[in-house]
Amino acid sequence: MATIKKKNLIIWISFSLTILLLIVFYFIGQQVPGPVEKPIPFENCQLLTDSCLDKNCSYYFLCEGVEFFSCSVYDCGDKYGILIKDRENETIVKEQAKPDKEKIKEARERCKGWTEVLEKKYENGKLEIKTSVVTKGDCEILSFIVKTDKGYQTPLFEKKDDYYNLVFSASLKDVFEIIAVGEGGVSIREK
Image 1 (cartoon, rainbow, N blue to C red):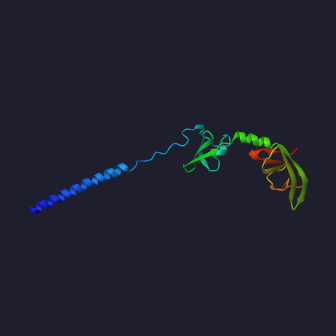
Image 2 (cartoon, rainbow, N blue to C red):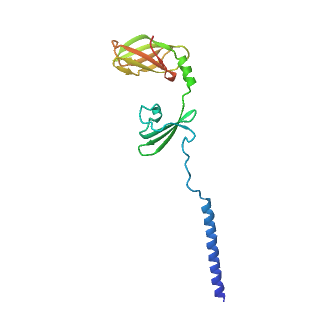
Image 3 (cartoon, helix red, strand yellow):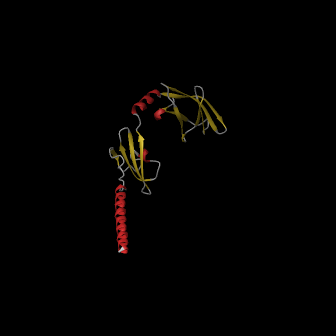
């Protein structure tokens, strides 16, 4: 009789442990989240273009920088939303702030002016030009472009007291025009 009681006790303990394990696994399974849904990028934005593939698209500058298969651009208020599918079908999500039109307008007004060649010097195959840039207001000069009959060059330049010293490849005989580039991309040309 003691053997039967031991067998029943072992069966009862095994059954109880099985039920207990099933309950534990059930609750663990309830706490494991299912697959997480990814939010759709820019779902609250207005689609500007869904196939910006080349320079004929006015938003192409937002898509450049990677080789891509498709590029969609969204208007998200104060920024652009850019959704790019690259050649490996990976999705790249970018945002870029829109330019502040009022600041650009102010920069254009401040940067109105002209450039003037003060001195030319030819040395070691390079032309050194001392030029002044006169603007209506305080305008930061970002770069210079030299237009010659052979094309365009971006000279090295250094700001001195009240003038700029430019160095580029040309001769004293070459005809050229110096264009200063101010804030917001404003072109400041010779008088």
